[in-house]
Image (cartoon, rainbow, N blue to C red):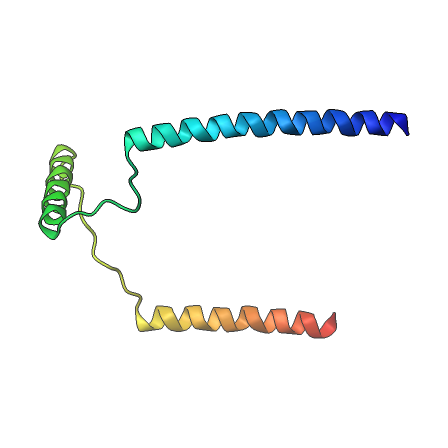
Length: 105
């Protein structure tokens, strides 16, 4: 029993030491926080600034494309009706196999 009491006392002392240290760290953070100013939330950018940033980014990409002999910008590709039907049929076949396997299991 004496061992347990000694361990408890050591743990309490350690807790007090850590609490004191944390208070000091909190005070230091508060001092730095006030010195640096508090910025919360996202930075607000005006619509004209966003337009300028977009134009600048497009210009940078244009330079890249010119340097690489014109990397094409592909449009959105669409599947033909026949291709979509083949995919749907294959998917129905796969699901039929899954359902058949569940019935036998």
